[in-house]
Image (cartoon, rainbow, N blue to C red; front, top):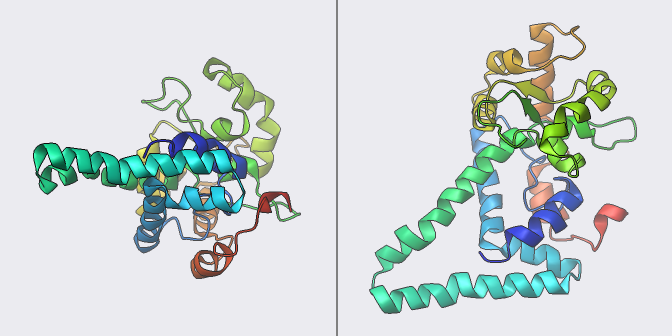
Length: 252
């Protein structure tokens, strides 16, 4: 959908750092459950269609983003399908060539985000621990420009990819103190798959323990608790908190 990802990724996902109100929010589900993953696919589908971002922009009086996305949705869901049908006369063509990529991307984004934000922990004030709620993979086989360091993607967006090792060194004390969500030598896709398969052995093997003090069983237990932990229940969030979304709620 035109003008969906650019404004929503910055104005929603990064503004909230994946927290409550985000169209990609997932800390109300068990990230190790295939059943809960189906609920997450539904949530990502509302993002891909544009409706959840449109709802957020309206609630927060972000008129420019709202108007841009409304126009994009009209073009994607009405104007272009009408033109394509007028040319081809084929609903099958519209589904497989025009709509199917959107469906495929919905599943793909839902899947990789399980690995990107699979863990959650709170500090003494009840706030999210940054080095835990976004993951980083070092020495990944498909990491060319720092794509696998989602922690820096959220909390150090100004760091050039070649400087990521220095950034991690500067945050090393936080990494050690909180046992940061840092892994090595696998991909985000594998990370998501291992979580959904509850393969704690594999995850523990790839986990980077900067303290060198945790046993494999301790790592497995820690990751399991963080991946299953919820900030709020799904039903409460979806049917009570979200419908009552308040303007600038993240500032209150």
